[in-house]
Amino acid sequence: MRRRNILARSLGSLARKYRAFQEAWILPWFCGGCISAIPLWTFDIFVLIAKLTSTCVMAIIRVIIPPIKKNLCGETILITGAGSGIGRELALQLAELGATIICWDKDERRNNALVEEIRKKDGDCYGYTLDVTMRDQVSALATHMRRHLADVTMVISNAGALNYAPICQLRPDAVVKLINVNLLSHIWIIQAFLPSMIERRQGHIIAINSSLGLMPCADMTSYCAAKFGLRGLMDSLSEELRLDTWTKNITTTSVYLGTVSTGLYPTPSHRFVSYYSEISAEKAARTIIEGIRKNKKCICIPTFLKLLLDLHNLLPYRVRIIFTDFFNFGSRGWFCFC
Image 1 (tube, helix red, strand yellow):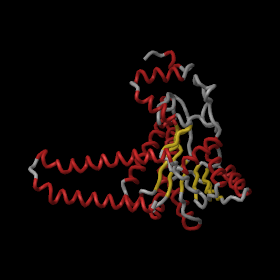
Image 2 (cartoon, helix red, strand yellow):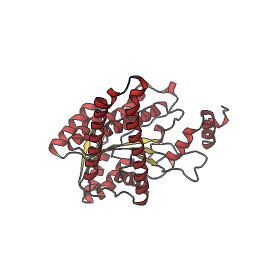
Image 3 (cartoon, helix red, strand yellow):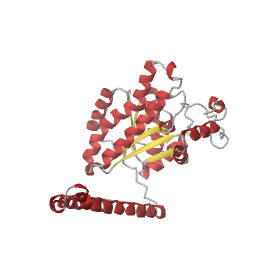
Image 4 (spheres, one colour):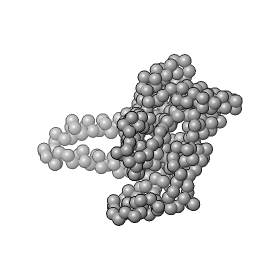
């Protein structure tokens, strides 16, 4: 890893020096207008070809030689919404891998029960009760943990809420609460823990999203808005970290969940429910941890979800909604002609 970073920095430094040499010595020899851009275009196209070639080679190598899974033993992992569902399963399974688990949840009883269960299995676990939508609470507790416990090396922002109703029937307070939980709380968590990761030049931020952050759904406008916003947040954060050499080793992962049997989502009713209905929280957590250990940028559950959505988005709008109505046979959309 160190050798790769030294090589990348050396190449980047060499490219910047060559660009400065171009601007100072080569460009003045050319006339104005389009001709003056020839040296820059030549160099940029060379860099483009070199990047594409190296990326293809690395992709082939990774297929032949799978990446080594990183060891989570000794990591200090914060999980929000840890009291139930996927958050609970993630905490249990990560503790078995030797990580120190910090559980945040607004339900004190469930959170304490999880902490006790992990400790009974000789796991290292701490629990805190707070509302992640309250920025002051998040910031104060993050500072307290850093001073008295340990630096958090990995954050799994899992807290979420769901409601569904036509947009005109949504109560304003319910919309505000849903946006706060599903979007703003992720921002407060990142702002609280990213600075310490930047100081160490290492860390991992995981956001648990939904398949509705990739595709729209009727009667769930506020939920889709929050999840689409979370997708944009993580994509922008990933780009921000990538462009800064100091933060390139801070990894981001977005997890897009289909229907998981946590009690949060309604029972599936699509046409192919006999082939795929929903998966258990335990299995979903296992898939997420597998992806985290491989530093994946995107994890979809089920795994074929992203491929289907990519193909779906390539289609024209009218063709797309026809296939959507066919998939959701029994909904009112099947009787609507586009």
